Amino acid sequence: MSEQELQELEKVFNQKITDDVRIEPKDWMPEKYRKTHIRQISQHAHSEIIGQLPEGNWITRAPSLRRKVALLAKIQDEAGHGLYLYSACETLGISREELLDQLHTGKAKYSSIFNYPAVTWADMGAIGWLVDGAAIINQIPLMNTSYGPYARAMVRVCKEESFHQRQGFEIMLTLTEGSEEQKEMAQDALNRWWWPALMMLGPRDADSPNTAQSMKWKLKRKTNDELRQQFIDQTVPQAELIGLTIPDPDLKWNEERQSYDSGAIDWDEFWQVVKGHGPCNKVRMEARIAAHENGSWVREAANAYAQKHSKK
Ligand code: FAQ
Image (tube, rainbow, N blue to C red; front, top):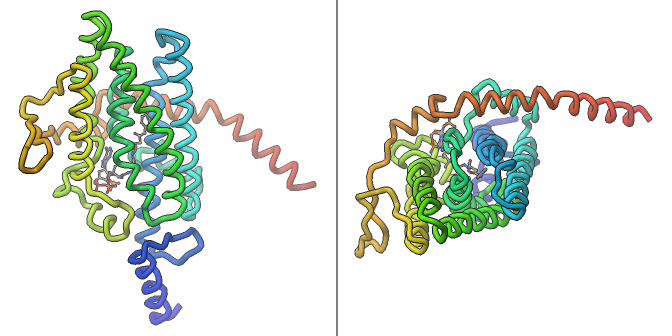
């Protein structure tokens, strides 16, 4: 392709971004746009899949049939989200095998939040309320992201996350209306999940190497810090409503900004977890790799079936 033809294609692409016309798989796109999308969409998919593990531990210990059914449905939804996202990512010219290989060899990241343990039933409440709550705030703007398959996948994902957030909040509400011990359990879960939930939205904008370009391409519609502020402003009144205290002594309403000021996040902890040194990184990866290996007979059977039918 000549330099002039390439420039022409780039011009058409840039105009689409400016006009909010979605980029579709068969459209020409800059190589860096393609790679950045593979990075973000695949890491998002991996997070949904690994994200099943902390809650999966509690299915057999749910306190009632109703709670068990809701938790099971939620975890199955997360598996579905992973699958839509892998499919969206594959439209960019990478195979599922390669994506999974990147996860299993530690080349691709997944969300830091899933490297923390779920130690009590209240953690099921805190995960739904805070982790799914933060995920929705991050994902609603992604329904307007510039890449068509990613944006479309987000529509259903956001609807389902909203049910997840409510089921988590309802667990917390029930605990806070229960015995003193149950209320303490809810507060303890909030204390442990609050800071990791804030970190989940990514490093400060000043330390985020990808944000500027991703905003230009409209892959990201809001920066990490904007999303974090939105999450804090939305969640603090919810905690107050159920009589829980956000574990941040510096949290204060700022009348001028009409927003909360909050305390410093421990970014060293965040980077340690991202680099693989969080409390559960090792067990999460072991569980994921074991699940993949144990499922190899399903993939072999599906391939054999497909081959048999392609010969007919
Ligand atoms: N954990 O320059 P930035 C869910 C990495 S889904 C680990 O700011 P970017 C549902 C980042 O990859 C949760 N690594 O990067 C659910 C980059 O490294 P790289 C997942 C992180 O991409 C609920 C480096 O740091 N959601 O929870 C994290 O512009 C309950 C520099 O960062 C998504 O993935 C982190 N928290 O912004 C499931 C949403 N943050 O790749 C089960 C889509 C950053 O250059 C149960 N993703 N890093 O080597 C996004 O919106 C963005 O990718 C961000 C990061 C905002 C996460």
